[in-house]
Length: 319
Image (tube, rainbow, N blue to C red):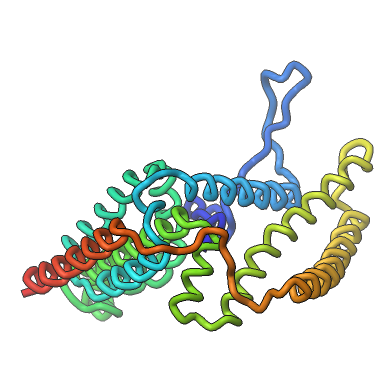
């Protein structure tokens, strides 16, 4: 739900699964600080920096959730129910026009909720190539989706084979659905504090054990990232000169992983015992009691009308 997405590298240079922050080159400056040459940085340092950027994005998300936008004022339960309904509408839509209107509506909600539009678009479209690229590309070929060939890639027994118009349409429809769905989820997570979102999930009947697992995993993710950052900075402060990536560095990395797992196991037991002693039973508690306001009714009614119009319009366009 919340995290730093990986981006796709340039064709032929790196596989798409490698995060962009791991592919960036560090600059080694000369003593004057004005010129220099690029050198390959440490993968461990880039991993730590990626974790720190993730923490910064989460803190930014908390600030956005506390803003006075349109979606921030809506009850999380209403937002969650409307999200589920709009996801169903996006999944059932076949017309590109319908999906384009729904995506434009998410951009409008993002602007009305005080979200930076550039940040919102970037966060959404960094997911799309990774999670849909492998699935979409084969569907554009004539061997998977027969139809009118628009780009010939090879010939098979004298018959041209390649990218078809029907395959491109199906791929575009899938990408549009994924973009709309991710936009809706990002809107929900960025405009709702985490604890209130968990409380909304519990109030809608999600089992308590799932809420417990999700809440603890979310907290321990950033706790472990902070522990890794502290361990790495402590080693850097105690290592004179330029650190070497030799056998000793690999031994330190292995020992750090073992130490981190031991600390996480011990801390989880202590935290669980402390929470149980204070009456925790798996329910997410919030200081703000959820209340249904007239604005929530207006928003829910608007979403229902919008969803109905999209379904009717998609049916008419599909004739």
